Amino acid sequence: MSASEGTYVVGVDSSTQSTKALVVDVATGRVVASGQAKHTVTGGDRRESDPRGWWDALCSALEQCGDVVREAKAISVGGQQHGLVTLDAAGEPVRPAMLWNDVRSAPQTRRLIEELGGPEAWAERTGSVPSTSFTVTKWAWLAEHEPEAAARVAAVRLPHDYLTERLTGEGTTDRGDASGTGWWASATEEYDAKTLEHIGLDAALLPRVVRPGEAAGTVRSGLPLAEGVLVAPGTGDNAAAALGLGVRPGTPVMSLGTSGVVYAVTGRRPADPTGTVSGFAAANDGWLPLACTLNCTLAVDRMAELLGLDRQAVEPGSGVTMLPYLDGERTPALPHASGLIHGLRHDTTPGQLLQAAYDGAVHSLLAALDLVLDEDADRSTPLLLIGGGARGTAWRDTVRRLSGRPVQIPQAQELVALGAAAQAAGLLTGEDPAAVARRWNTADGPVLDAVERDDAALERIGSVLSAATPLLEGA
Ligand SMILES: Nc1ncnc2c1ncn2[C@@H]1O[C@H](COP(=O)(O)OP(=O)(O)O)[C@@H](O)[C@H]1O
Ligand SMILES: O=C(CO)[C@@H](O)[C@H](O)COP(=O)(O)O
Image (cartoon, rainbow, N blue to C red; front, side, top):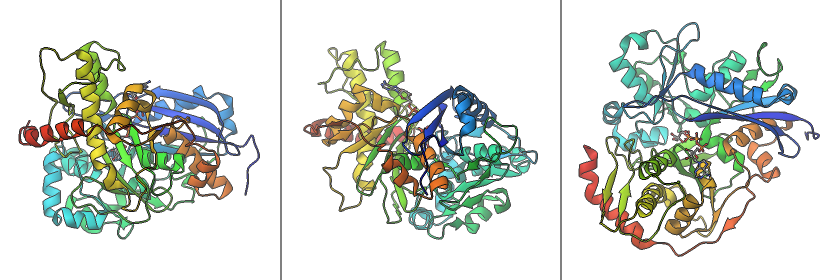
């Protein structure tokens, strides 16, 4: 069923730092209105946000879109993955949500991997070996450290689930985001009863998993959208971006945001026992093998601030190495790590130090790039570079120099929100959302030619990481 121009949908990206909302024309993919509102994330030894702040940011972003938002016929929400949202019987948050980049559950992570069969069993059951990002480890932390709060929990949601439920009044999720919990078995596509029993979480507290192509519900009255508007299942932000790019198997994607991410889509269910690649489900069908780092744009921006430099003021050509693990690190799995500099000399310049921060952040991602691609993937296919960092020349040049691959920069921005919009459009037209995105030509953009890969820098960074790992494990 096609849609005439002037039929609109809303796509939302509720990510770590902010909410972005787009009003998109179903027929053409043209963004006719947009809005953005920042989130508050706690600092120090924790990374938490109040889910009600996400809702307020969503309402603000929708209001910024103007009256056209009330003409929308469907909406979908993409959200930061993994966050533990705990609601009481009245639907109010019991406590702030523990986010994907909160590493306090490191002890629970190690314990759960050991107690439930080891890395191989976890990878075969869920597609992933859990890291501190996974919701299952956060629930275990809550049960151990805040049992009174855990006892008050009447519903457990992911960030995108919480916002979708505020729209519809129903507790739903999707396979894509569910696959990042650690209690959804990708082998059976069901919640895993043994895991839930082991962590003391009643399956009744979990949302219904809505199948791709189905509606999660309709918009309730009294909201910034018209009552009765269709609400799509939504999904995690990376699965939404994959929809937004209409990416096909064999095309690697690197996202440079609060998290650094590399992924591809495949028809083969991933199960990496090393834990480097998380075997997530795609939001339509198939799978989304993905590697994620905790230290990406925020870490590099912090180094630029410390050095008193603009984020683009890099100078190449030095032997200094930086592992910018300011938040601990997930890939490689060093949750207690901190930042490390090696090879600093009198003649090292601030610009060279800043370039070293970019190199260290990109090195972690490129180490996983080949692992997320099928073995028969064409290694000359341009790497799609997205996220806020993709707007920066220093990021673009660093990715080209350390990957040795051509890099394509989609002109479309906010691909998570575009992917959510494509999912909403698919509810109206019956199309696969990835096909909608391809019809919108969302991946179109300039291709930056490959340059000779800087193998010397890659080897230097790898050597420093190997030598420093014992130090970083206990840092
Ligand atoms: N022009 C730019 N050059 C380099 N980095 C940028 C630019 N614009 C935004 N960024 C980076 O993008 C980040 C936000 O990216 P985004 O993908 O929106 O984050 P998230 O989705 O994780 O909230 C900021 O932390 C900032 O460092
Ligand atoms: O944890 C992951 C993926 O496993 C992160 O990608 C989060 O989903 C946060 O995303 P951004 O806020 O960086 O977009």
